Each structure stands twice: as structure tokens, then as C-alpha cells.
Image 1 (cartoon, one colour):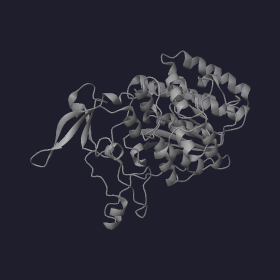
Image 2 (cartoon, one colour):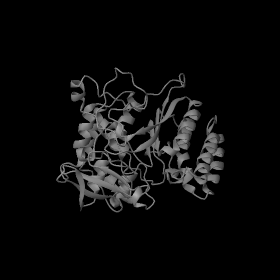
Image 3 (cartoon, helix red, strand yellow):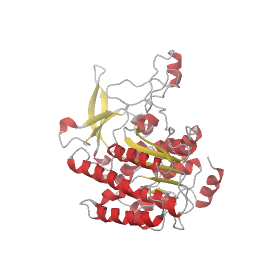
Image 4 (cartoon, helix red, strand yellow):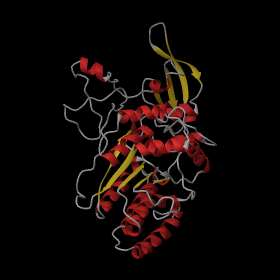
Length: 400
């Protein structure tokens, strides 16, 4: 059960794994993309109007979600901090109820407060907790919960992890770097994984370990693993969330923009981004095509691309401006398949809002199977194309 499902970053990963899913999505253009991709979407568009006991979703035993994050994108100032503090306080009011009647009264009071806030979207981040408690008190508890958001929401997820520990879940929250997992962009997400385990709520929760090099400005790209082995391990580095022992498996070099766009853009180029520049040209981020892209947002079409040409001294210099990134290229930088059927209006916003499917494979495999994803799943993701519902059901029957 995927809340605020978007165009399907988590759901396409689930389908690759052979796990059936259904998503709730408000936006009609995004729903059109999901339909074209063969992803199941609830008839009801509003997360708040549904619950775990509704017929379309009652069979789900896993809950995932990425609530809208606009209220927290300003968490560096007083307004953003207040929104975070409000959510943590209200979340505390929702957990620990022994019966549904008591919870229902608490939810009514909480919803009344969030509805009256200057930004009512602040209450969206409480919806997953409402679903978790309703499932526990009215239906059956979800076996696994996965929530993801921008890094500023990490304090909320850590608070949720503590609260979920009181109702039978082993839960942890950490920030993951997308490029650590082979996504060709630097994107950070706060991720919560909770697993129902009433007798062992204090145990560690398995989180995905990095498979690729962490990008750092000015750092050299690692050699491929086979070349690292030939070099006697001198290139060994580890960009994973937790410190790895020296004997741990070496990580792959980061995946660059050119690695995924090389078929259509074979020559070196530089991406110039306005993201985070405040309009100041001196602050515009620059990445070459041999590096991961900066975060792909809903404004990625504003990024400018310039050819890198070699001058007489053998140095690279900026040349003519190139065509801007296409929707397909933006999707590829988010690790969506090349043939993903983006639909309708404002496709760039759909792409920018999505969870990278490659990162989703690592998260879901850790949450559901407590181990690393199968290599063949990444091949399936790269080769994926829309298929009929009957073919999809046959694939789902195989399972992970």
C-alpha cells in the first residue's frame, strides 16, 4: 500500500521484485502516467478519505509512503522548525491507544489542529501514522512500514521510530544518498524502515549498504572493481551509511551522467544548474558529464548544458550550448527505465517528485527481505517496458 504514490518510483521497484502493490495518488496527470505504466491506483484519490480497512487496499500487509514535503523544505528557519515540532507533538498524541474509539477521538482533535494551520499540508506527514494505528486497531497491523522524505524530515522519522517501538515495531531512520546505490545523481532522502517484531523491538533494523562510491566535489572517481582488484586494493573506499570493515566488498565507482546518457550525448559536457543559486550566477552548480548530476527536481528543464571541447593545450573548455535535458533523460537520471511512459502535463514535476526506482529496490529489499537486492532486478529495471495487466500478474506470481 503506497501512500502519496507519485508516478511509481516505489511501485515499479515492487513490480520488478514480484511484489503486488497499489498506490494512492491525487494528481490526475500522475495517475495517467501510472495507468500507462500498468501500475494499480486506487479509485479514491485522497489519502485522507481512505483507510486500511477499505476493500481496494485491505489485503496489503506493507505500508509505504512519501508525504508531500513543502512544509519542511524551509526547515532551516523558524517556520520550518515549528512545522517539524508540531508534527512531532501531534504524532505523540496518536500512539498508544488501546481501542479504536480512543484513537478516533485523538485523530479528530489532531486533524482539527492541522486543518487550521497556515499550511494544511503539514498534516499530510501524519497520515501514515493514522494508517498504521487504524490497521493495528481495526484490521491487522502492517508487517513492514517504509517512509521516505527530504532530509529535513529525519527528526520526525526518528520520532516515529521511537513511537513505533512502543506498539511492537523494530524501527530506525537514516539518511541515504542515492548515488551510493548507483543512481546517477546526488539526492539525499530520509528513510524510515519499521518491521513488526513485538518481542524484539530494540533490535537493529537492516538498512541497505552502499554499492557505489559517494560523490564528493573534487574527489577522483574510483576504478571499476576489477581494476581495483588488479591494483591490490589500494583504491578501496566505502561510502555506505555505516562504517564497513576493511575486508568489506569494494564499492563500484559512482554512476555518471554520461554512463546513462552516453547513447544520445556521447561527447563530454557540463550541466549548469540554477538549483540553490538564489539567482546568483556565481553560485550556479556545475557538474561535468563524468560526475553524477545534481538533484533532479521538478525544474530540471531549466538546467543548461554546454559542450566541453579540448583546446590546443589539451585542456577542456566550455563550448556551445546544447539542447536541454529531455523528459526521457530526466527520467534516466532518476533511474527510471528509458521506456517509462510519462503522460500528460508537467512531466518534469512528476519526474522531480519521484523516488528513484534503483534506490527503491535497495530500500524494499532491505525492508522486506533483510538483504541486498538481486543483480537480475537491476537488469529487469533497465529493460522494463509497459506490459499488459495479465503479463504483470504472471510476473507477480513468481515473487521475490
